[in-house]
Image 1 (tube, rainbow, N blue to C red):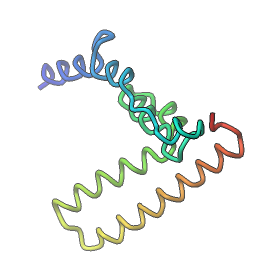
Image 2: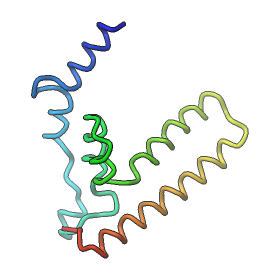
Image 3: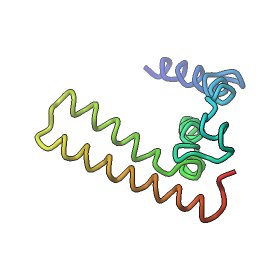
Length: 117
């Protein structure tokens, strides 16, 4: 088990040529930013996930604060599909609203502090 975990981590991180390195060099361009020159409300999510895969939680949060909420929602939704929780749909709706509020607050913060470029 330890050997399999070590092989997985080596493939993920690698010596400058692992999956994370490849992912950093192949991020998708934001069409909204290409058209307007401004960040969209979702800009930073890819960089945040890459930072999280590297283990840098602080940088991940700085790139895109809603990342953790989105991951919690995805994990909960998968468990809800498997185990069909009694109030699962209500929790998912509440998480969607919470994530939307976090995204809006984050975007307003970027606009206010002129971090859109």
